[in-house]
Length: 102
Image (cartoon, rainbow, N blue to C red; front, side):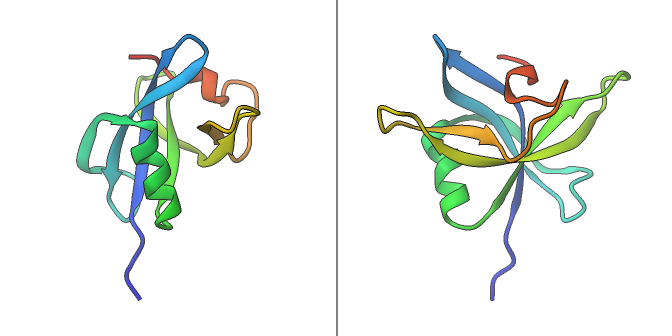
């Protein structure tokens, strides 16, 4: 069986209140370094990675500006039937809306 990739999301782009892009990169096996640095990806591309079985995690900046792994990203469906992104678990300071915007 093929090993599943882990991607990290460092920032989001919105159109109004809807997420339209994510700054996403490929993580190494330890989720400590980038194999491919983050670049803008459409939400549909992130959803495709999740549907394929890859892991996508949030990466939040700490007080010193270093990125720390946060909760996993999952697919959510809005009432209108539009796919969007959500966190598997939200807590203060670690909500999707707390990620930087680009």
